[in-house]
Image (cartoon, rainbow, N blue to C red; front, side, top):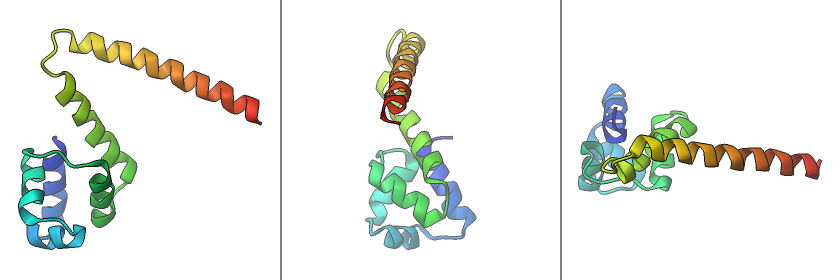
Length: 106
């Protein structure tokens, strides 16, 4: 499920009108509608606000939103799966270095 669709489904599940949700977020109704339809991408701070407004896990919202950002970035690349594998290896190395650095601090 796309991020915007997920926001819409949670909003509807809670019986919130589009205008009510937009008011809670201090956001223009048309802008929120575009996010829900996938015509606009929310910014990170908006994702956090969505999570708080809908009383959902902020980390899960960030993960869904960020994964959609990555897909949008590489979806038309010929070797998108390979790109993801390389990125995963790099992230793994960074995480290991961060753990090693934490051991030095303590």
